[in-house]
Length: 169
Image (cartoon, rainbow, N blue to C red; front, side, top):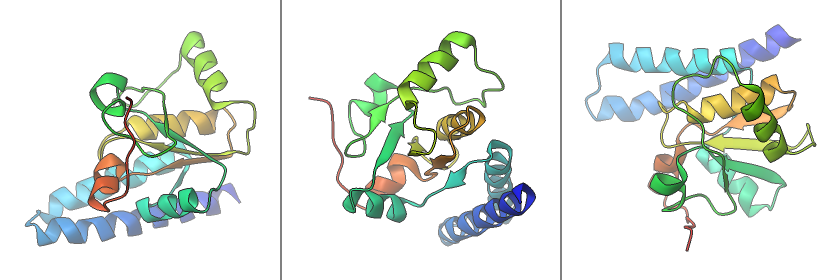
């Protein structure tokens, strides 16, 4: 069952990235660069064991008032304070893939995410190649959260869709 869901996640990632690559091709992207980006993304999702959600799907969940914890993983001062998704909360994570969590960070992260391991949690950062959201979704999954998602397009995709943003006053 786990192998089937992993394969399905991989296929979905490839489809998502191929859709994204159509935009890049129209802008004159090189096929090898597109392939590298698509495979990198798909492997991150496969390694992380989490789910993905598109910008449009997440906006629909927000409009439906679905119980979703939306986590902005970008730096507070440089990004979150200036703009974030309505209702999002901030937990800054680094860009390089986190291969381990120290006990202090693990405890803070679990406290932040809360005790409900079935709650839908969506992580986002700045753009597809930013891995902050990958770190969040991957570690939530490793800590036993069953509905961890990554919204890969991040705030750039959100802004391109012209969806509303909040800012810290």
